[in-house]
Every structure is written in structure tokens, then in C-alpha cells.
Amino acid sequence: MKVPFTKMQGAGNDFVLIDNRSLGLQLTAEQAIRICDRFRGVGAAGILLWEANSSGRADWAWTFLQSDGDTADMCGNGARCFGRFVHQCLGHNAPFTFETGAGVVAVAAAPNDEISIALPEPKDMLWNDTISLSTSTSTTVHFANTGVPHAVFFVPDVREIDVVVLGREVRNHAHYAPRGTNVNFVQVLGLNSLAIRSYERGVELETLACGTGVAAAVLIAARTHNFTSPVRVQVESGDCLEISFEDDGSNFSDVRLIGPAEIAFTGELEI
Ligand SMILES: N[C@H](CCC[C@H](N)C(=O)O)C(=O)O
Image (cartoon, rainbow, N blue to C red; front, side, top):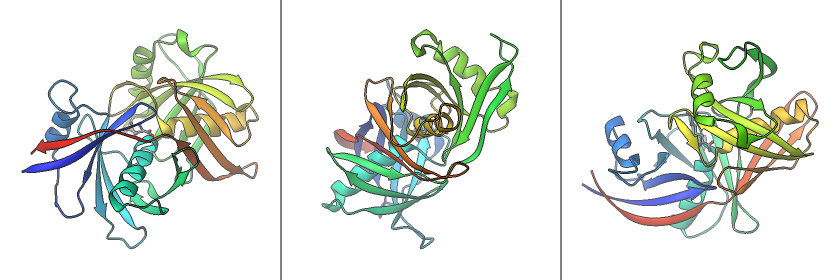
């Protein structure tokens, strides 16, 4: 079966998008791994399937498969790419909602040809937690689930971090078992300005950007470094992502991720 796809990237986090509204495609883990393979397939961090929503809670739904073949509840950069893809296919830029494993996400066109998404309400936030690592027995770590789980470490210089080695240790740490966590190393550049490098579960490597990780880092910084909305975050690709939010001092709401989402190329998969 020939399946048309669009390869997209948002701040360097890349995805294969498929309009599955009428195809009835159900990809196996092996197929997803093959498609995402950078040598044998298209190459991507994940696959996003655009589907009809059956719950009545949103306009559309997606299925999100990562490059290891597993599913994940949410993806911030993927959601912006999904927004651009749906806009492109429908031929207009009207706001819409879609259902993810983490709840309903709202998409809107933003200035400068960017896309804005409203993330699910953050949960399980924990700051100034400690974890013992091979490099130090008591390291301060913060945590937030912004659709998917994120550990956050503040470091003096993100360039000095071995993201793959340290990220993998934390991702597989007993502290976050059994589901594991994404891991973010964050440098404060100034008030309301961060640089970040992220190790992603499901890709099992550093990626060039992680949108939900950026959101987690910003919300933690609001509590630990008095950050206020909006916050600009420099990601590993060199792009900048923006997070805006409402904060009543104890709860966050209306958390939005704004940034680029671009089509790289289109093609046909043989499935
Ligand atoms: N790249 C994503 C996160 C994917 C989620 C995933 N890596 C996991 O939690 O397993 C983002 O932009 O938010």
C-alpha cells in the first residue's frame, strides 16, 4: 500500500505526518521504527497520524509513535507540526483542537508564520527534589509533567554537559521507574531567558529541541527563579521557542508553546 507522507520539523525536532482520516492505517512498532530509521527509512523522531476524533471532545485526534516504536501521550514540537499540516491540508488557518493521550490540545496560527499550541495543564510538579547520580550522590532535580514527564536540572553551562551519558542515566533511574522520564539540562541566560538541551525518552538520544521539555523548564523556573510570562528559550538547533502562561502563584494555566513548524518534503511510503 502506498501512503503519502509529509516530513516536517519544528525547531529541529522532526516528524513524519500522515493523513490517516480515511486510510485506517494502524502502524506496528516495527513499521514505526523502520520509517523513523535515519538510514533505512525517512528518518524522524516520531510519526504523527491525523485521525478523526470519536470522543466528541475535540475536532480531531492524533496517534503519536516515537522512533523506538512506542507511543507517547504528547509532543510539543510535534503538535505545532501537526497544526501546520492540518492547516495546509484544509487550506485555511482556523484554530482547531485535537485529542492526545494527555488531553485536548488547541492550535492557532501565530504571528511571523509560527504556530501556537495550548498545552495540557501541567501536573506532578516537584521542585528541589534530590537524586543520586554516578557524578554526585545528592543532586537537585526538578520535575513537571507537561503532557509527558520531564526531569529538569539547572546547570551553569549547557555546553559542558554530556547530555547522552547523563540524560540516559536519569532516564533509566529507579527514581522515575517504571515509565522513565525525558531529561532537560537548563542554563539561565537572564531573567525570562533560558538555554536548554534535552535527552528524549523514546528517541533515546539528545534531540535538537523538545517543546514539552521547554515548557517544563520554564514553569520550574517560574518557581525557582521568579520567571514571568513570556519566556524565550534557546534550543540546541539554534531556534528559539516561546512559552507564555498564567500563574496565580500556586497554579499555572493557559500554558502556550509558540514556535516554528516547517514542511521539509513530501513523499510516498511503501507499507
Ligand atoms: N519531542 C517532544 C516530546 C516527545 C515525548 C517523548 N520523548 C516522551 O515523553 O517519551 C516535544 O517536543 O515535546
